[in-house]
Length: 293
Image 1: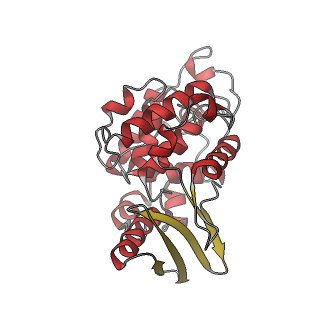
Image 2 (image 1 turned 90 degrees about the horizontal axis):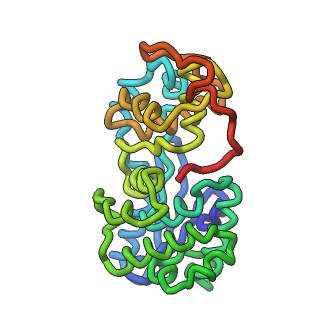
């Protein structure tokens, strides 16, 4: 949806920059249990590094057997786990891409956010003339922009300032996005738990993280706990719900979203407590579709 990947026949292609140099990576899946990668770049080392990032993004090396064995009979996601044993968490090759995407997706519709992302990529991303593919804008490229320039792409002013500050911190080396310490990011105004949890799950590969403030989870968990399709849970209740999945919270969240979209979850599920009374937080009116910050 962000325009960074392309399908050519049976191959999925992606351009990455390793050490500032462009590397073209191609992937094909000739059989359900086999994926072949190839890369063309300035050196064998750069090609290997690009393939490693795409293997991370596609999750082909993840051993999901423990998750499958533990949750195949789960009362909420078990049907999805049994039917979709190969379902994986969607990731970006570089954590900076995830942070950039998450900031654009705060509190707006996903489709609108993707349009903004494509505009940013088109304006500030690297374009390879040989392949026509683009790579995401670097932190340096975003940090060099005035907030007014970023808002011209339909990004809210607060998001533009937050994006530029995040880019500045990463570009200066003050934030290591491959590390799990996100205190510096959380100190930036308008960067909250949802944003850094999206980074952890989709950018760092942390299966023990779930973006609990996501509107989708608030709606699904609210319905599960009350049986009311119009209910909304609170973020704390979503976190409590996912505690049962331990180190697999992130993947459990992917299955929950998948199962809910296909009617594979129960109309109601009780964790051992009574639902709230009418007029409490469980009876909140539905809000317009948006992404939580």
